[in-house]
Amino acid sequence: MDNAVFRLLTADELSGLYENHMKRDFPKAELKPLKALQSLTAQGFYQSYGLFDASGALMAYALYWTAGEEHPYVMRDYFAVLPHLRNAGTGSALLADMLRRFCVDGKGVFGEVEIPDTGDEAVDDLRRRRLGFYARAGLRQMGYTTKIFTVPFLVLAYGPDISDDDLMETHRAIYRTLRTGADYDKNIFIPYPSED
Image (cartoon, rainbow, N blue to C red):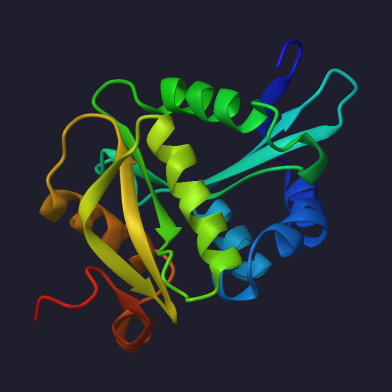
């Protein structure tokens, strides 16, 4: 990643990233609408970063979601390396750099990864590889799972020790920046299955 630049994306760059890359890199069921990402960004709850090579070409991207300064963990919402650069160490190097940047002064990062239990061996193998990627970077699996709309996820975290209960509080607060009331209750399950 010599001479690569990791920086916040402009509003226009986020729009282009969404249309040209995110729609390709993530299943439709996991992709929030662009307007939601723009709204969260305008409210200060969302940050979108790109990794660019020396010529200014995009190499990878990472989008983070927060519930505000009072919560010590931010959620890695989307993370991808462009297809032609995958399996060459770019993602590992970028993730290590981002963890160093974000995990300071008692702060940490967490994320959701799809559970590898679809019954489709190709899909489940990809999901297991993702879990392995994050485990090799030092993220630990938390003791709860979630279901966001129709997609169940494992939760992985990196940073200072945090209890499941405390991370679930932050996790819920993050989703409440986008969904409230009955909409939240119908679509966001943290933990899943519910403890109620």
